[in-house]
Amino acid sequence: MKMRSEKTSLTTLIASSASFIDGYNLIIIAPVLLILAGTGFTAHFSNVLIASSALIGNFFGAFFLGNLSDRLGRKYMLVWDIVFFVVFALASALSSSALELFVTRLLLGIGIGGDYPIGSTLVAEHSAPSGRGSQTAKLGFSWTLGFFTAILTGLIFLPLGPDSWRYMLAAPAIPSLIIILMRHRAMESPLWQAEVKGTAAAGKSSQIFSRKLIRVTAFAASFWFIFDVVQYGITTYAPSVVSEIGFASHEASLTGSLLIAAIELVATLIGMRYVDVLGRRILLIVGFAGIALSMFLASVSDNIFISLGILLLFALSAGFGPGIIEFVMPPELFPTNVRSSGAGFANTMSRLGAVVGVVIQPVLRQSYGIHSVFLIYGAVALCGLLVTYLLAPETNGISLSGIDSASREQPSAG
Image (cartoon, rainbow, N blue to C red; front, side, top):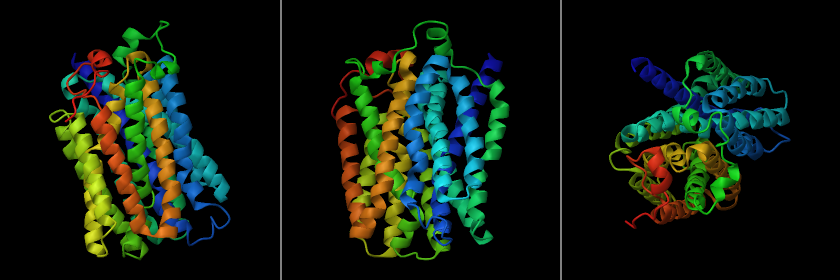
């Protein structure tokens, strides 16, 4: 029993470590673009395409690799998606043109996309009902730690000159290799082994759109889509956003971005503490309400320090609520034979939301100003609050087998 517990903890550590690298790989593009803007490297290529390249890869990778995880096993696919991290992190750092950077980041994103549903499903299926939320939320904390580390790396490497972006992109290859070397000690999901392995039980991905599951599929996909429109619209361009509110220098904008990341990191720890106490619904409701409030306040603020404080409220709300629930709830909502497929589809739709946020943000900012961006994001967050209030079930404390039926019940309005 002790050996099994140790292997379970190690499996959670490996999944969380991969989530850390996900966060780093996705957000490191923010300081990279800041540096590339002064080099001419992207002069004949769209910065928006480079900013969204890994997210586009996520879109394709999440559903496809998630479905393979239901068929071949969680542990098996977890290892292979991490291989993408090593190969394409190094390839992106060696890019000789903006087009190469776009392609290698897109391929990197395929692996990252697979990691979301596979890692969260593996951890959820290893966890006891009473502590499953806090265990799975560790992936959200690790992702945010990767976000923080990416901004910190940008600030540290900034003085190294115009090629410092290459070091930033290559950095995740080493910890990814360590995770691959640890892979043989990870434990396969006991639920997948008991219910799916060696049988014909692996569900078809179309099952998540069945009458029985369509409601939870719609909820998981929509709340995550909405959150990522705002989250990536802010974090991918965090230095530019901070610069727009008045902190003009590269150092100041990166420092402000680092503070935002630090607050979101602390917020995920608070969310981890309360997700199994207050439940998933209340964290989502409070989180979306806080995001909407912060964006509306930011849209009317002209004081740079008040505006920064408001962005810290955004970070607090995002980390406490949707920032961890996006890892906790999707794998809880689906039966074992399509659990990774369902979480993968939700992640695919979230990446569509992220791409929308990344693409429209600079267009809106240049055409109408940063305050209009905040106003629109506030309205988007209100949609997330409404979706959660109307559709979100409560999965706290229920076994995964029990959730298969309980999560399909109508939530109480309130």
